[in-house]
Image (cartoon, rainbow over all chains, first blue to last red; front, side):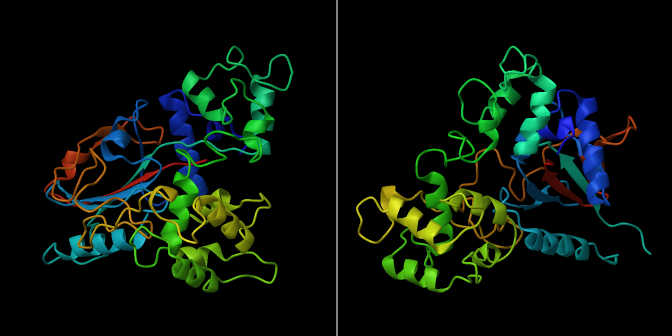
Length: 95
Length: 244
């Protein structure tokens, strides 16, 4: 909470990256974090703010589009969609 | 272990925090003349952030912007009049999803609440689990004592029930959105957003080509990732999230 970037919008990619790295470390996230541009172009394209889950299928098309969080954040539905997508890959095993 | 069948990417969007610690931090950093307020002249991190921090919209950033009672703008009351509290109450009490909270539904809702010995409503149980406990509590805690009680809920209901008929309907509440169906079409959650067949304009929908992007990793590496590079290779799970 006392860290500046956690309080105020980062004003540079470098600063945003610092906050993202802190988030990844604090939460011990196993997946890579990528940074949206400072104009939030990708977030706007996906209407991602404040949080949202998607699955892009192997065909490059949206396979699952969750509702906007916090109330629409549905990890169970997203997880089911992931399992379905991975099972659909014939001959492969889920982990 | 076999090869990874899925790529997970967290798309990071920072978010603001607030509270006494937040104000203390900002004051030390920006209040150059130590007059316990931060003006636009003193704040050098952009107008957009200044406006976001100035939650009571009085043109300066002060401690009041970080206390619930001090906020009169974005943080304290729901925007657009009844929208916030009305929507919250509709979400949890409108059992038959007809955008009316009838007297019977309201009674059933109150009777079904799990309440601690101290009078606090079990908000997580009320929501059926999942996210939103803090937000719901913050928005409906009418007496600002940090807990949601039956008194808070009844006070909100009374305030919303403009014609005093014991029901909430029409202009008294915001219209509830119905959830989309299952089958990977964005089932949504208990709040039922967005409406079926009418998602938010511009939201990518199942079956549509995913908007492509080429974004850098958050690590110090200069590498970037192109979403379309995974097409034909493996599915990609995207998490849009923020961090305070």
